[in-house]
Image (cartoon, rainbow, N blue to C red; front, side, top):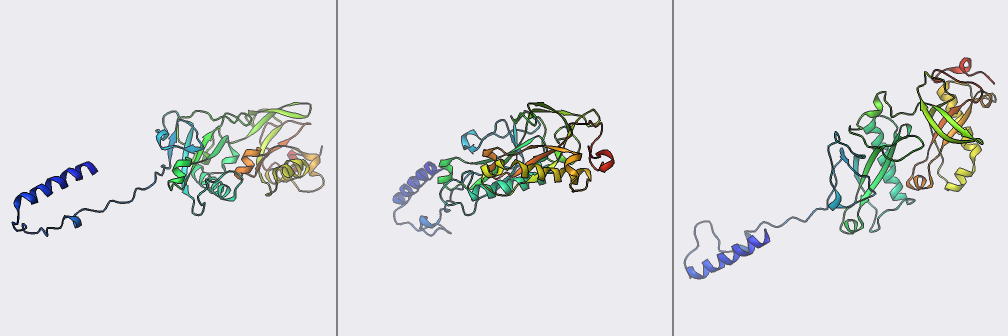
Length: 294
């Protein structure tokens, strides 16, 4: 466009020189400087929401931006695109309040998009930010990407060929349910998902929102996590929160990794655990008749 303008101006100047002192045509003031529309300021690229991507990224380069139809194979889905308002000139990093505030917003937006708490299902939440060069150029967006994970223990992102919008509003294979734990030397090696109508010893009961404290302080206090998850079991199964609770059920829990903690994830996944009996139904609302004192 600039090249076209340059040629046009040269031609116009030559025409004026040839016409000498002839009068201006009607509607022409002879001043070409005020006839050009001002060019608008270039706007930084902002990615789209509600699109899918064949790869998961944490840094969004424009050259690699290639959204795909969610009906075709993909790894992640952008559920929301937000913007930083006071991040300054430095790209936010995990552990910083600005980053964690964006991650918290992504969590809320993901819950709305999915129709339930993303942490209660085989899902991951990733915060993608502009590339460093784009940030220096003025980009201030953040992208909230959700992907389906392979299993509770294998958090690698699986390929899928359908949108996740509203996925947690209906029964399906994403939500955590009942499990058969594989235990060796009192350590859970794997949680094998199983239908709740089949014999099992463990069930997902909810999320315990851990307090904001240093990560090492948090994981070193296993007793506090266990008690919090016991209370979560009690709420789920409608059990009294009294001194007998620990004799009715045990717990298994999965807490965030150090990297997830730095991002701002404080959700502990709580599971019931019974070494002395099995169930062939969900313990939800089962009460003391289903879970008597052992």
